[in-house]
Length: 156
Image 1 (cartoon, helix red, strand yellow):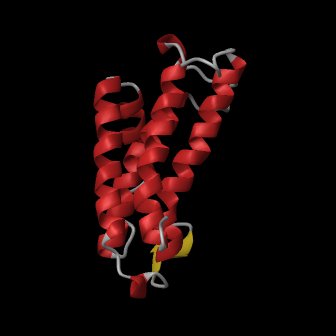
Image 2: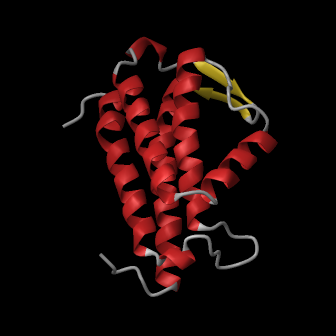
C-alpha cells in the first residue's frame, strides 16, 4: 500500500495511462477523431493532451516554472499528435508517463508545499504532481462516454 502521495502517484499514474489506452481502443478506429457535438473533443485529442501534459508536468517539477510555451503552440502540438499515427501517440504517452513516474517517485516531501506559477494561477507541488493521474482518469471517463454513445462501452 502506498504510504506517500509520491508513491501513490508512482503506482497508479501508469495504471491510469493503461486505462486511458484501453478506453481509446474500445472505439472503432474511424470514431477516434469523431466528437459527439461540435463543441466536444475527439478521443484522440484527449489522449494527445495527456501525452503532452505528463511531460510538461515533469518539466514544471524540475524547473519550478511553466515551460509549455504559448497556448497556440500547445494546441498545435496537440492537434498534430491527434492527427498523426496512433503508434507514435501511444509511445509518447507511455514514455512521458514513465518519465513522470520516475520523477515523482524521487520527489522529496519537503517540496510538496512549493508553489509553481502558471498562466492560470499558482499551484502547490502536491497539486501539480497530482495532475497527470486525475487528468488521465477524467479523460478516460470522457472517452468511455463516447464509447457509451457508440454502444461500445463493454468492448474488450
